[in-house]
Length: 497
Image 1 (cartoon, rainbow, N blue to C red):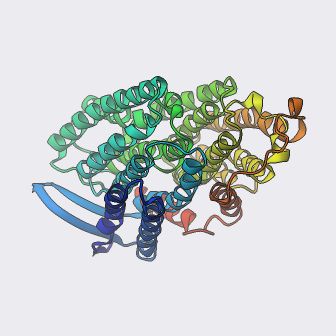
Image 2 (image 1 turned 180 degrees about the vertical axis):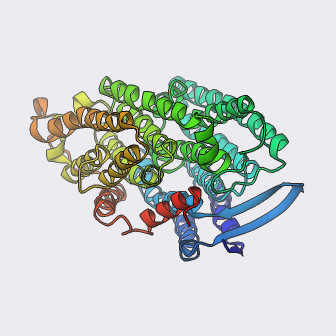
Image 3 (image 1 turned 90 degrees about the vertical axis):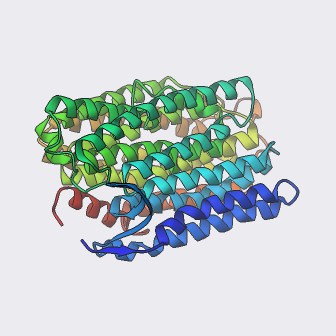
């Protein structure tokens, strides 16, 4: 595999940090300029990331080392297929989220908007740093930048509920960080390196029991941000945050970064051979299956729309982990591709929840009767995205669920096929009533009379993300070669290149 040395990964990561400083210095007095920095930075970052796709598709790796700290450990950026996949998704959705955030924050005349956009940019700085990290140390640095920068976003409203939610968020994630530090230290002692390698680098180092302990420590550490049950409670609590933050948490950065890190450990630290030899894959698969089924049941019981969406996210993150744990080409490909498919669909759902709140200040599913007649574009987009998450064709979720089911068959584990099918039924059970009530039930006492769509700043990102969810289901490579890159990453991990 040829390595190209280029500063582009560093530049892509740095764009958001530069924008954050410009946003801070511009402040409240020049709001248009402040938000202009957000949009310009998102476009520049995306352009740099996309420029690296052709090289990676040719099987090349792009590297840039800032400094070597000590033997075997450096601050290094490395663009492989898996990292580029996540970076392309995050940078693409940042454009949509930036535009949406402007409409949302202005629509509510929210306070502390400069702080909001500043922390938002820092969060994307952390997410891209995670995507392009060449080793565990670099990844951990940006992992913590992401944690710290999103804490003020979760607690943005500064109510007692918001501050409590922010503290819980920080407590869970910092506890997970302590486990990650332990895991990194033990990994370096065993191997003398922290550099990622497709297929893993831990095999042959340490006793079986020590490696099992290390795996558990890694999964619990990164699994906290990935919201695996029972270490998930911070995520529904964090729904007190403004809706653009919820979209950031679920579709663009935080929990997606958590699941990305879990897959980095599974596929690039331990690797399929070691996981299979120690039977760790089956434990992780059952752990993920438990989360899939239980989170779907919890979603059914939620009347608050954002909390229902939060448990749906927990469900889908576990599906991604299950796909990787199967250690089959179709399972890994489906799991990786679901990161993007779910990203576009879930951000659509949260955008819809925010548009409803801006126009009506309603947050509960039971209050949405008839709203589809007043906000048809918004609720039609909700229908597209929710059916897609359930795996209904032609949306992108069908492609991922199909490959995940194939992965279960390739792994000769029919039980996980039934888990995936049960998950799809639960998705329909908690999304279908929302669609039905919004379009086919009358609004009580004309609650929604005179209601219209939200501003174009909000409606356009909603509609575009819903359309992408359909296009990716029909043409999986229709945008930025997502499916091809996912397949390339799966093959490299399995040594099939």
